[in-house]
Length: 485
Ligand code: BES
Ligand code: MN
Ligand code: ZN
Image (cartoon, rainbow, N blue to C red; front, side, top):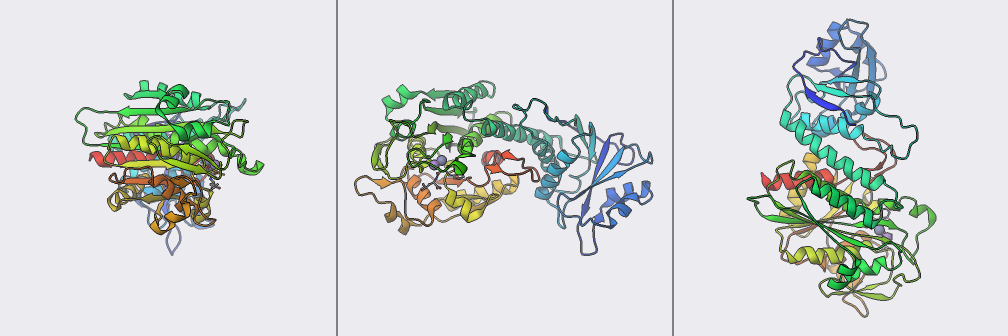
């Protein structure tokens, strides 16, 4: 269970708790305790400043526990670095580390948010996300003992509530991603999405194989051919009364990507249960909308299938008739994400939403370009790009805009179909975006988020935990909240 976050008016030097958290900033003259840290330091006869004198710089997430020897009611003080110019992002990061470092303490009092714009939301997100653990398959799980985190010195209840909703959604996305593919099949993913929907004020409609066949979803069916698991198209709808406009979200839901006949090597396949992270972020973001009282209508589409090399698998050189009637030529069956997204983007376009955002672990090339911590995004529309940047500032997730280069489009001209699913060797993320663009109504502002890198983390870092990260969930939520405001 995640800890309860409370707001308390107790003074730091009077608060009764197992650990009291104070911030230290970095400066040229060494680490600096703020006003609160200074007061606590005085009450401890200078013990804090003495402890951080050596080997402490105040860098984000740096951590030092100091005993209080009964001089104040708090059992211990944790001094946490927040960097030289702390803003919400640094507070979120520091709180994430703190949640893990203080996991053995039942009651925590924190002052990390104090004096920071949106600091309470950031600190609460940090505590809740940094403390996330996926323990379902551990026989003897190391559970966090933290029950309560009290925010001292004034914190907005509304900010904390919104943080809890966003963190709960992100944890849901992480649970989806961390669940092995043997369990999280397309059918099970759809079942869980439907279950979530019924408790979150959403309508859900799951299209099964027969329905996909009947309505001509050739991309989803083509990728699913090589698998014994039947595909699903998950559709969710959030339609609040008095909605101001409507938008669509699309998420890649490949529950396992073996590459198909263009088979991956063993190493590359190890983490390919992660290939439904875009779909997880979309389903998870949808779970938060009614709690946040978002006032825009949102339609979500998650094409879910495995990509496997079975005897009936799609072959290099095959063509696909996508939903909406366009044809693609499949030259590499490992470029499967764009094939299923093409169907979903064509379907999303039919509703004429004001904007479409898709999220996908689409290309290794994006990981080569931007590394493991940054989402590369493409946008057909500058205003939408500005909105995404603003949302990413709120969420603290890192985004970088990539170019959609028209003169590269001819590299995905097909000999026999409207488009082929791979380009030349270089710039693979751009070819993927160009492929997708063919299936989006050009009149609709559209953005494509390639989360191949940040969807999974190799180790705990700040508010991000090892394994599935739930990346993009909170940026999507912030974007939708922003469209309401
Ligand atoms: N799911 C992968 C992309 C990926 C790779 C995500 C590594 C996360 C980590 C995608 O389906 C894929 O295989 N893309 C190919 C495309 C290529 C064949 C044009 C790739 O990036 O190698
Ligand atoms: Mn692939
Ligand atoms: Zn894939």
